[in-house]
Length: 198
Image 1 (tube, one colour):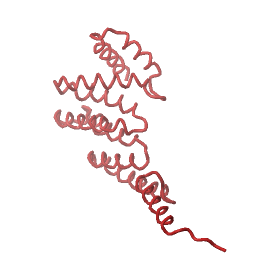
Image 2 (cartoon, helix red, strand yellow):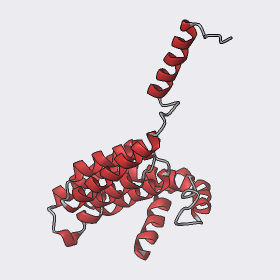
Image 3 (cartoon, helix red, strand yellow):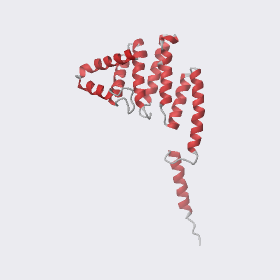
Image 4 (cartoon, one colour):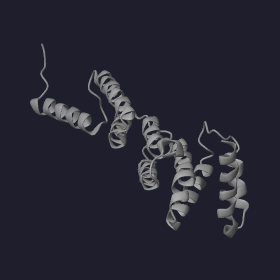
């Protein structure tokens, strides 16, 4: 003898599954394959946007790739290209254009710190964009403060679990040991040393 589930229980189970899929707590069978295919196509579009130097499209695609795959490296790469690499003197961009894209790239990085799976490299990149591309072309006191705060956050994270500088946690301890009125100068001195070696 077979026993059927009550229709309201079946309806409740179906509704639960639909709500779980819509909220992202449950994935449909095959969703990983679909997402992988979508990311592959977005990477192709991203590469084309990079070649064409379409920075806004790069940022948009990077955000979508990050949303689907959880990988924040593409967002950081787009910020590096728009705000640092192509703002170098060798590209012969007008100062205001270079400054605009450097500030835009830093906004891309700052707006997604909490979302990125590995935000530490982005914090360091934002600091370098501030130091090399924004501050020489801007008199903004706010930009200087943002650079100092971003670098302090990078030091506080220890540079991340795979940070480029394994001594960054020690540097942060030294920073905290400085009297508050000397901390800005400590960061600027440390940044100058790093930039001189790169």
